[in-house]
Image (cartoon, rainbow, N blue to C red; front, side, top):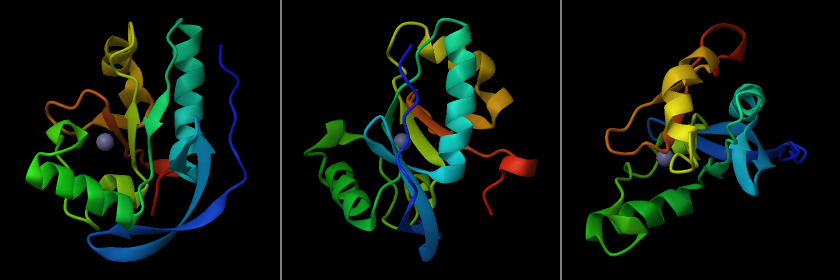
Length: 143
Ligand SMILES: [Zn+2]
């Protein structure tokens, strides 16, 4: 099993409904992730590992610059496989909730489909099996 490694939190500017918000992010698997989402992913990843499934974070928090670039890729269909990207300031990758996981790896999507909701994660974009958002209520809620 991969060792769980997270860097110290650092401040970042996130966006919800086009408005800037202050977030804290850590690096997980070399990608920035909002701290509450990162903690939830850590718990979910441990549960998956107990079932022999290795979850990997392949994309988390995005800056405005990154979201703008991916939106342009989508609009022009000239990069990022034409994948859908929300308008800058409106992506859950900017609010801190969204992660892109290694859904094509053996057993990962099936495990997530069966268990992610137990950990507050939901697959919210049709046609994107890798895109999961943390929407837990209670102690883990992002406000
Ligand atoms: Zn995504």
